[in-house]
Length: 386
Ligand code: ADP
Ligand code: MG
Image (cartoon, rainbow, N blue to C red):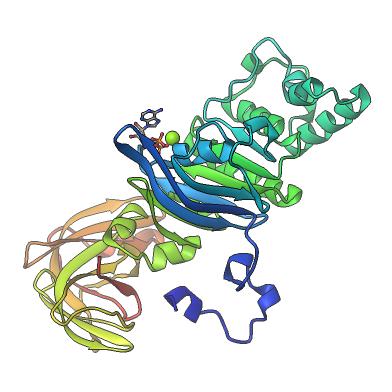
């Protein structure tokens, strides 16, 4: 049993669980041992993954990790070297892109510059020979949904980046695909617009009940959008979980480091009970206590991972409790809603701590070169064995 499953209350009935937690639920998209080689190079390396109806699944990974290649195989633009892809139970081998119940929205939206917004959206339906009146109705519906109803007559160059992105989304959705694949859909937008558009994307996806697979290299975006995240590294999915679990219970140093920021203390396991571990860490300068079990060899070298926001920083020594270390503040950055501290330990290790700024004056409590205590609860950290 994984950690995340343990925190689901036992009274929760199967119906209330999301599909991916229901035993025996049929996936909408099944990826079975998919590999893609380019010559000697394995771009996608034996990936198996089930995605369920109405999910907004994010493939998250650094550049070159194989995200686009996997997406292109789902769309049918790339043929797997080995493995199978099933959509709604149907094997996609030999099925052409346009015959699949799938649409793909590319990173470069590739709108037709000479066509109006409405005609761009209508394009796919026209090519299919759908009746004029029907096209008109569906285009209006779709433009309304992406909040562009008033801009149907404009040309793409008369739109902002965010508006163009929404035209592309409308164009991809108008043919009512069962599965929409989006490759870095918000990549061209600046941060603020990106955040607004993320919520729109979620609303539209929920309204239409379409299954989305979204590729992104932006971990905050994945955390905001996803029902589940698949973290990719070098052609492999290294962890698949709900955003909260990927963040709170990363399964490896790679994931802990890739998602958000984290402090890691290397150490040796000195006590390993079913529900608690003690780690002797020279880097931390003390024994660290974590209240979940691990399975590892005695004396194994592991890392204790603790998020910066889970560390308390005080000038006074806390009266009781474990996981308390001492250091000197080397740097303070005031970031508006929070303050970031860099604290140097006697071991030389640097620890990052963030504190929310509740009041205006709070930032004044600490200053450079202050000697401080850093402490955290036993359930705030996780042990990483790989
Ligand atoms: P991502 O989308 O995660 O950035 P890609 O799936 O585009 O990564 O690429 C994964 C790796 O496969 C990269 O190293 C890339 O150079 C390589 N690759 C992708 N497409 C081809 C191709 N057609 N021929 C050779 N190598 C490719
Ligand atoms: Mg890519």
